[in-house]
Length: 342
Ligand code: NAD
Ligand code: DAU
Image 1: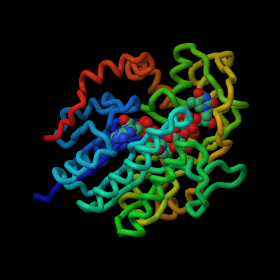
Image 2 (image 1 turned 30 degrees about the horizontal axis):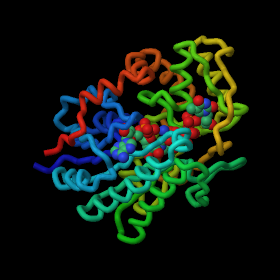
Image 3 (image 1 turned 90 degrees about the horizontal axis):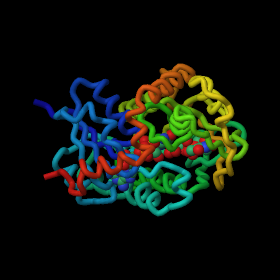
Image 4 (image 1 turned 180 degrees about the vertical axis):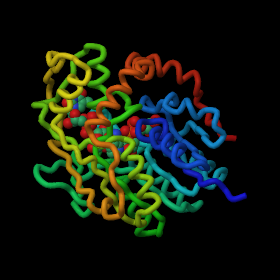
């Protein structure tokens, strides 16, 4: 019997990684997934509760910076593909405490690349971000645009991005890099603009809008992102970078207004607060390269936003504990420090 296609996913207990794992099990009848996640504050095994009795889903609590754990996974499961989602991902936290970002988003990528070189891999997908290009006033960045990251998060992601490329250029490792715009959808930790504002509004709490509220982000539904990543894994050319744009650029104040409208909440909940330090004004990606390869986005913004808001309305049991801190206590007991790999 031939071996099941095996995906080594890192950071799969987070927002995009957990959506991607769900996507893989929906898309393929036969697939095996190993999810290595450190379970930082942003990692939540509850995102994958529905898979806990599936023998083809293996969860390993561990750190991508730990070469021993990573090596054991390669030896035990001989994965075909590695998709690296693991990262410290929140810009505001990187401003206060950059160290973990540099460690995970750069050194962690190195550990995964080294193991992939040593044990072999058919595809290494590095999940990068549009933030590596920095801010742009007019027009959109292509994959050829220079990288000008401007905060510790985006700078460390740029390091990981280029390090991954260097393993292709230097050692021929089959690396592909994706750079996506701002994601929204189910299971997003309630600290990012949309997940925070929807959950705050549901609790009649204020929505802290930075600066003049006119910074622009390009919004990509997480399911489109997952499809884009899988499309690139299957069809992309090794050594290449692919932008994955949402095609829905909006000022933050527009997003805020839409959330309030969808929830029937008053504008008086908006509170203008001090701006984020070094706040990038606008992100914008040109995804022509990916479209030429044949990828099309499937979820229009308005409908996907409605569904996202509805998801948070219906899953208060998911996000309320995260906001209250109960979650950490609960899961620390469920997942003790030891790695469950024998
Ligand atoms: P997230 O913060 O929700 O999840 C990150 C996950 O990584 C968590 O489960 C966390 O426990 C895990 N993790 C952190 N450090 C780790 C370590 N050292 N070892 C193992 N696991 C570790 O992030 P997200 O929003 O799902 O983002 C996933 C990836 O996509 C990141 O690489 C991010 O840079 C990139 N990205 C995110 C967006 C976005 O809008 N959220 C857009 C483009 C790219
Ligand atoms: O662009 C892709 C990036 O998008 C990803 O690489 C990052 O991992 C992800 O966190 C996200 O970064 P942003 O900084 O763009 O996302 P965030 O949701 O933190 O902020 C979006 C915009 O909303 C930004 O202009 C800041 C603003 N904002 C954010 C928060 C949390 C507010 O005005 N108030 C807030 O409370």
